[in-house]
Image (cartoon, rainbow, N blue to C red; front, top):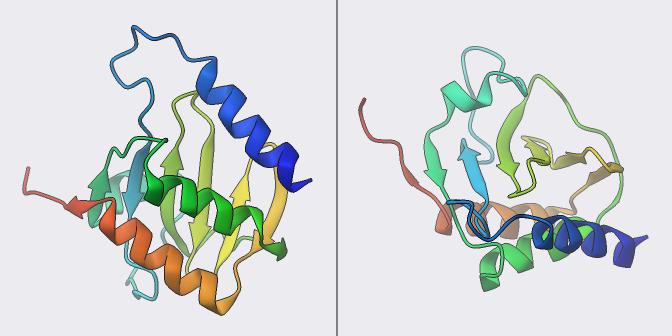
Length: 135
């Protein structure tokens, strides 16, 4: 199952045409893990409620490590009212992470990050994003 997940992600990345401007980069909308919000942050709302944003290369060490941590996680569920990160892969597929460590990706059942992985994922997401600038 784990090999299938990574294979699916990398095959999806390889399917992107090389002339796309964002080919090879993911898009991350992120509210720091552990943060509390006044209003629920849903899958739809994260793209307007985020604090941090980034477009890391999917081949970067940090991004590959992020996928490894998700892949190693056991079964779990995602709380759709506590979304803290949306990661859009170059093929358009999205990965969502909630404030409790739940992770959901469309081609895979939801998983739950261990406490250690949750902490590391938070550091990786922080490293791959920058503070939102005023619009």
